[in-house]
Length: 517
Image (tube, rainbow, N blue to C red; front, side):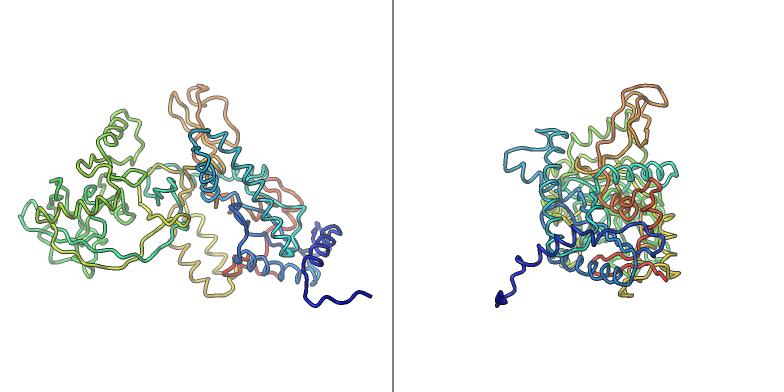
């Protein structure tokens, strides 16, 4: 007889037992008309290294649920997989290349993608191994990756379908721009951090009356891009200024005073500077009053200079600028400075000319990149967007009518508030790793061709000089298709008919559950 070990040694037991479960197919699910299906798709972990405690908790909850449903007699399917994680993975590969003295540009797109796929092979397998070590009772015969051929086919299909329905469009709009990752990111990828800052109270002279309007801003460096100041139409203090103009200090540029409810009579001085190219609220004010947009920051977070302005002017003059393309200012003595350096220099200049009234310290939440924690620069940029309002309606209804419920229930309110206030989703990323956008531009006539497969010629002029859009899609575009792309969609597979829609989504913080009998 063997003596019982004094301490539990998981290595002697767990791997042997788990391998036996897998070999005997205990976790496999099959289309079975005699049973009711129950499906969970694993929120795919990113291939950026290895799992952490959050993944362990998240997958443990899924494992408990799926095993319980098996014991209840359901045909229970838990679909495993991993996510390509565009921004995070590209950053990791670039960092590894930097150690070798290499850049993306030095090895080219194809060379970079080879390295990215090697990364996926190494770390994707590590993650799968860790999931198995946790005892996750997934159907491993169905393991998927967000960039495998099946999922990629689903991505192209959805993009083309939404484009043809005019739910996807390309245009110049304000986006969240990360100067370090050098790409746009979605609203959901912006994290707010509390930072020490200040309200700078500036004085703008009114042309018609000679008086000075006081306004407060946390970002005086963007004043060079102001195209108006706003007052509330109901504010009696400024009724005499309707239709008047002010002068931007330092650059002595005349801009209009506009009446808009964005100017809150109860907050600050009641006067707001409007910089449509660098603030989301100002962008909307600019649209309402048909104001021009003037960009004063480059994509790497520096003040624009003569070369930037000349390039933009040439684009506008040639007619190649798209609707909504912003003007670009030569920031002169401030050109090339970082936003923070320019803030210091501009404040000093304002003090020198008597246009700075006071500085009021404050602490406020500042948007930062969820990946690198760099402060986000709101920036007008030509990007691809999804119209969210028509898509949000059925998603809201499904929760309101009880088809889908959140556990705990307090997340229901957060979800509904988020969906009702959602803005059009910027889905293009200035990256190489990911699903390249299935759009081609004719080099001869400028026609845009959106298709699942690369076109041979331009349908408008017949030219074969076509260039694919270099951008990739937001990782969440493919992840949003995960519940059905993993089951064979767009093909009408038996798995899709039987196991979809799924029943429960576990995201660590809450459960999203489809109500079943």
